[in-house]
Length: 499
Image (cartoon, rainbow, N blue to C red; front, side, top):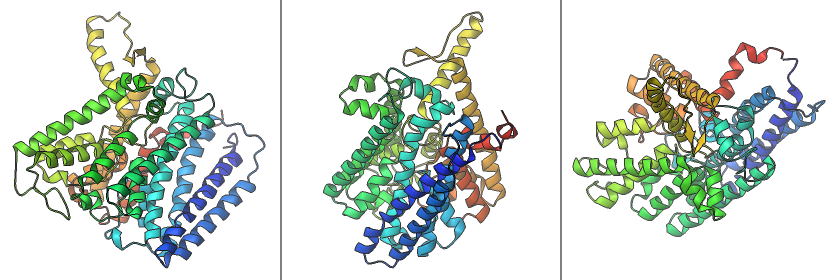
């Protein structure tokens, strides 16, 4: 540890805490407007968080500001840990979530944009706390965008070198030569999308409070709703659901492509291989699910939790299918219907979607589509190499050859991801969950999805899990959000050895 610039690491954690504290205070106006007792608790949480941040910042003046890879890994992980420790203070100090375990779970679920919850009656929560809950999504979502574009490519983590080669960083298509300017532009897009969705949802019939909360949860692909039944509450308002569908789709798209689209460079979007698979994949699966629902028409299948509507009409079937598919693929986790009640076949389809993920450079979690593309192409090339063992045939992505070390990195990521999923499911099963629920909870937590299958289905939550199970799911959410290697490398002995 002697070779680590610990003062610089703690100073970054201090900056993170200070910013988090100011974000907490944004919830105070909502608490005051609705005349809630939670106001003082939120105020005190912000004060404590900012004070902790200032102590870390001013008492850790580094001898130099040189940032090595090791410091990078620690800064990223410690940053999320700092967000979690400070972010749960509003829940604890207002008494909204008195249990530390539950507060940790809800907070990590928020910042990791997972959307799983332990709350059994969301609508009874103070409005200021509900806003803060949605804000944790929004903060975490933007943090991920900056992370994937500015930090992970520099560390060479989890296949992000490929993302760096295609868009940001030292390449011809970077948004701007400087990382800070790139981050600013992405912030503007992120804020712009949030404001646009808020206005559209308000016009479509949502209350202003629900509109701003759902906008933050959508653009961050988080999934926290202000309603117990999630977006199923608006099953009688199709326009609201179509607006959310559109913004979930955009949020699951590479933000660099969104930037190009806004600049009028639509050709770059159309030519993107990942975007093609992303769009056509969602459309194809939606059509398949829609046909299954219509073909196997069953009057017992209800599409809503609060507002029953039989999935007999084509538009209704298509809308609920499209909403559910995009919600799972982008790992948003909003719910308009319980897809686990549509048939075992459809449940199997959705479970497989848990392992897809959105685009690289988006707020989505999961494996990411670009990794699947590279893995599939590499697998097909192995057949060619079997017939022509001396041929040198590189994997090509977007018309460019992918370096072999990047292919190996992606394969390693996927193998590790699946290994963690299998081991994680076994561990959760040993903690009292039935095997179906264990598989669902593990896949959902690791992929930052939200709803799953079994006892953690779209109409259930994670409140019934034991304390160890909740903490383990929280850990899975964290490592899944930070691309596995970022966190797990800290548990290796060679990381702590001197260079």
